[in-house]
Amino acid sequence: MKTEIINIDPQDLDLDKIKKAAMIITEGGIVAFPTETVYGLAADYSNSEAVKRIFTIKRRPEHKPLTIQIHDINSLNELVSDIPVFAYKLMSAFWPGPLTLIFRAKKGLPAYLNTGAQDTVGVRIPNNKIALDLIRESGKPIVAPSANISGRPPAKDVKEVLNDFDGLIDMVVDGGEVELGVASTVLDLTQEPFAVLREGAISNKDIQGVQN
Image (tube, rainbow, N blue to C red):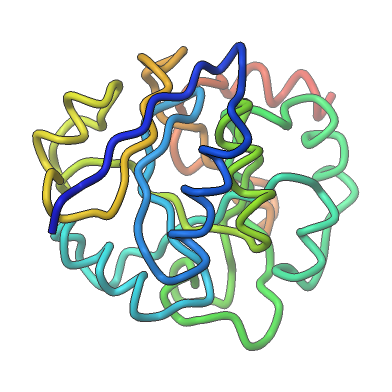
């Protein structure tokens, strides 16, 4: 397989190029793309074959679930069964942005999205114009794990993506080096008290500031 590379200026978006990348996702392919945190590997969240490819090429353990990226809050209705009041405060403060929230999952979601022993799902809205338009044009939420072999540092630019995945994915969207280079913070909203499972670009102190 030859991996196609397309360049998109985040300050001057080429919608035709974004639609081309989105079509690959729609048709079951895998596209590496920039977010504000790191580069991710995008696939249609409901396409089990595409998702299996991601697990295979990342060498990701099957028990580790994949989080979802969406382009607006309305998309949560497709994925989660309950949105706590505190979640609205967090989304208002940090979305779009580097905060992954874990919710109770809606019944029927694929097993590879379930976090831990319970039926939960992690979701975020990225703060990157290319990412948001790509998700929007794809017409569905996407799985978007970091673009790296499991255990290696996440890719911050296209060169690092290709070091791991050249010839293994369908396309790379080159949007330049990412802004933050740090993974998103992961906050579990399904337990009391709410728990930070991974502190990333947003600190625990920032989250407590919203809670208080």
